[in-house]
Length: 76
Image (cartoon, rainbow, N blue to C red; front, side):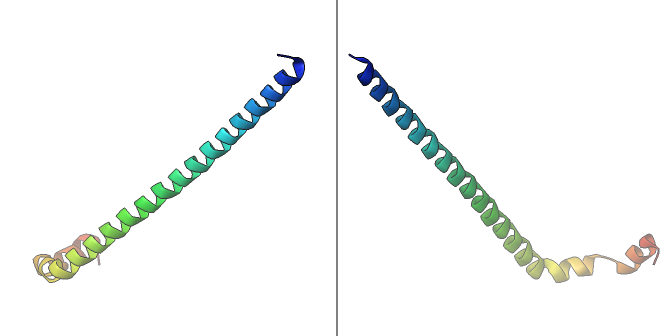
């Protein structure tokens, strides 16, 4: 193997390593985006669940609470 082959081989290896690092960073960025999307979907599901619970149980909860007592505690 001569010096020219060695230089070409090093250049090929550097190109391969550079391509690998670029792809790795792209996949990491994509994975971060997926994680944020998953969190947003979970948050939306929890919000819908809380809203549905409040809509179905709101009157029952409201009737169990003595608002006059709460007003006294709050100093109103």
